[in-house]
Image (tube, each protein chain N blue to C red):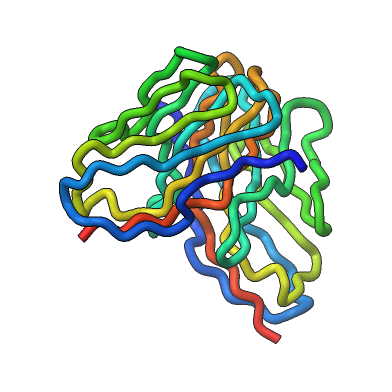
Length: 114
Length: 113
């Protein structure tokens, strides 16, 4: 069964600190990967996605993620966080031909302090 | 504006009282899905639909029903709600095909007493 793991459940950073959130998936084949963000009280929004090609994917708001196939990982990074990045971040995976089914990780709650 | 809408946004009800949460999208998407979000568990899929009259169970379908009579609507029905269905519910839609982004509704916070 496909699963997605996010090992950091709560992260607290100061403004301007660098961010890296871990995501690992267990599916051993071609997989599409996503990072979604949920700001307080809002719905999920897509930050970035990986389907194929360049393993370094750039998304909105200065976020990027690197797909490392050998490590089954898709970690999210941002060089310098802002207070407005306080949100919950979800990694998700979809197997092509798997009927659009998205499997989500448990989420990482990020708090950025001034 | 392209969007997924859900109603109601907040609902407090009692055990056993049937309820329906509506979901509608205006993007002509084939695929629609319902998720529940619980602390520490992330989002889990309840039911999904690949197109009109085509629905299937997700990971946590027990206690829920859905229907897809029109392409734009995908209501979630709780015939006899129980307290363990207290949760935050999200509807999502996308074009068919694995490479397409899912768009999420604003969420419905349900409390079952």
